[in-house]
Length: 148
Length: 148
Image (tube, rainbow over all chains, first blue to last red; front, side):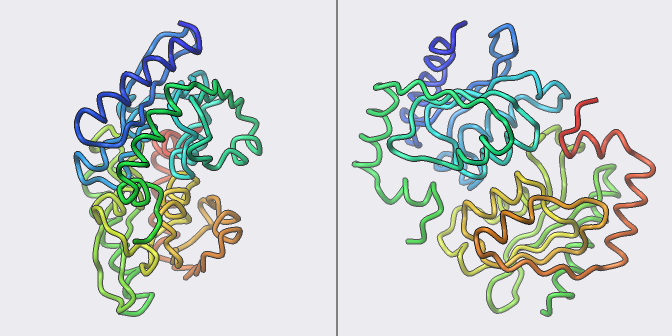
């Protein structure tokens, strides 16, 4: 699978989250052959778990393993500092994002830790998130830790 | 409750984790009156969830809320970059740790974000962790993302 193919799978996860009434953010983990080894989407609204951002859910779904340093993390949106930290804990060396126009996370930390960050600037990802933020500003602010 | 009282409750969580066959790391969230509002311990071994570090579990257990900026996070050990990132996402302003001799996490990030970090240098915390690392070096290395 190409980087765009992987992002398209992350977009499917985001759409799943939106259909469930949650935030439309999706994530994929792929191995070095481009095979998907885990998927996840934001479940914060669906489960009440404040740590259930898409990337953290995806890493959780990958289970206990020791090959993190060979994987690629894909997200429809620039990861927040929690998801960035989770990715850095496990030394995931490559991160593909759909966009960082609606939200720019802790991208400087990826650079500091020599993680390769690839932004595909995908219009579908930008639209998914912009539409959601316009309709549900309060859910979005809660997601990124802004006090009410 | 004093800071040491809160740390003692985090130590109880760590001991609970150890008794379950997991890593002896415990965490507490307290409000500005010193009341405990959530507890957690490392559940990585017990549940197979690679994100189940003590502090992340504790924040998960606190559920959806908007008062994070008034809380104190307590941990028996200096938080790793994932747990630091989770705490920073939600703008938790004050972090109490038992020790950072066995592991020093991403403490510089707390400083960069003006989080008050208090290290109680607690001998019980140091011993709990040192004993575990000596007996289970591989479980410990997996916990902090070192490839096997």
